[in-house]
Length: 393
Image 1 (tube, helix red, strand yellow):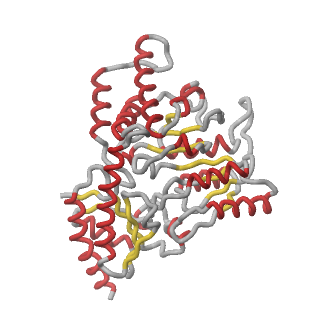
Image 2 (cartoon, one colour):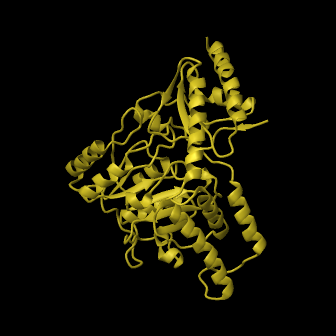
Image 3 (cartoon, rainbow, N blue to C red):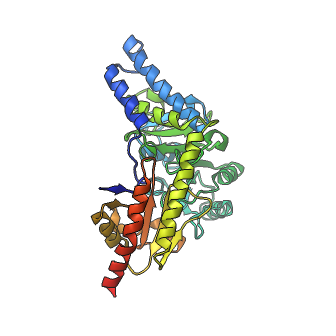
């Protein structure tokens, strides 16, 4: 029997999404939502209902919601649009309007999209991977001194995807407002796991995906601040009110809308609250079991954190043999170090925190996790670590 504890990477499709997508498929609706005939209007109705469900969950107006192919596209669209990298009147591509401020603990899609677009002024972080407003101010001042201008864009993730730290995102957005700097918030790790009142946040762009909260793959969201108009990252059609070209992924939108509708609108998220409580109990137990082995330490803020993941460092053995040892007994977890990804570099998140970037283990739970999964990990982890340490000694 397998025990999947890597939900922060991706989580199984929720029953609500599966049922909604199956019903849509069985209805056999076929039509371009941009057409005025009956078939087109039927598809348009389904698409707009999904958009309304997404908007209700994060507390914004439906017209602020732009549907994309995933969180990565949404991130790139935010960088492209807010830095002025688009073309003017179909002319040649412009250079970026200025540098970008970004913390090294941001997701790789945020960091790499930024470094491709413009010079980056790095925001320093503390030992918990926290992006402090004062550090943002310091980065702005350094950018002004080095480049003669403030950044044209600042990134601040809602929560860290690797260690789970919740960022003081509202304070950072307010600081950007005071300095006249546009701000993008990557909320991919947070939406569906903690309350996310995007409307109250009032960032310029907020991006998130679907598959990490139990929705289908192949769809993401960009939420634009009211009145903000950006050059589209994908051009060639008038879809999404001219903000993202390409035929919309209607079945995936239907599935995502169904999931967020089930979790509740922003004013009533009792189900989300219940899932958070259960996830917190399970990750606290996981942390207790891991730390009980000895020679292990927990990373990230242990109080202001995502409820569904725990990240630890293990002394005396690298992450890869732990992952392999756990996998052999049917347990799937993740590491941010190079051995467990396609990257050849250690975790930049842990490196920025000043800890050993080669020996991290991230265990994460989700809606389908059972107490049996936790029991299996608790029974296997001590033996795997002890046996590996014995081999090294």
